[in-house]
Image (cartoon, rainbow, N blue to C red; front, side, top):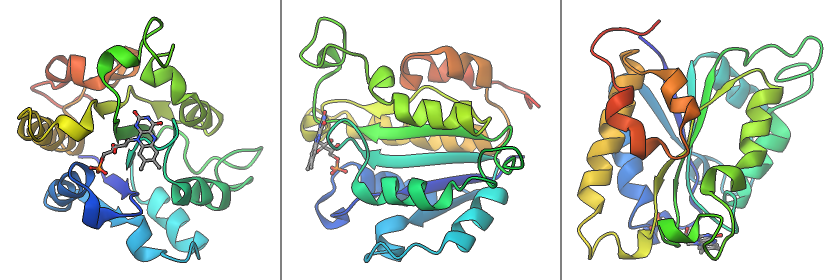
Length: 205
Ligand SMILES: Cc1cc2nc3c(=O)[nH]c(=O)nc-3n(C[C@H](O)[C@H](O)[C@H](O)COP(=O)(O)O)c2cc1C
């Protein structure tokens, strides 16, 4: 069994169509600790010891957020700046996160075709999330492909939300049960494309 930590980061959850219900799913999966970062730290006054303790107590860390300006909402950046300290997360004696798994669970306003070399963004989502992947590398963590809902603004009317919620539930349960092929998930561009293939019948560790 793996301990899974979901750090939900949304500055306006009252207006969230996608991430708020996903957070509710995470709260209801046994073995998942779901934290509403803006709810806990509305003034950005992050408790570093508590956050580092949370990281140490979990095997899989999920940054769950809408894509804002090709990145995460501001509080997650503040969290990274303060919590991932030298000597804790990286550096000679900074080994606390070694071997843990990191992934982004994101929603984007733009469509899948926009996140390609030939689309308006001229880059794939995973390459735009490079600062997270490089952070994972520096901290000796395993970075998985992002779990993503594209075209989030139209997902409800196009009836795509339900399927995405089910996929998130499946993902979280498989991670908790250690029934997840991390190698396959790390190699993908977008986790959703390979999700079923990553979920295995027996424990993977
Ligand atoms: C401040 C802000 C910045 C945004 N930046 C991007 C962006 O860079 N790329 C993108 O595809 N969508 C962007 N969006 C759209 C959001 O990603 C989208 O509204 C969100 O994923 C919907 O999730 P929610 O219903 O949980 O809020 C942005 C939205 C806001 C409010």
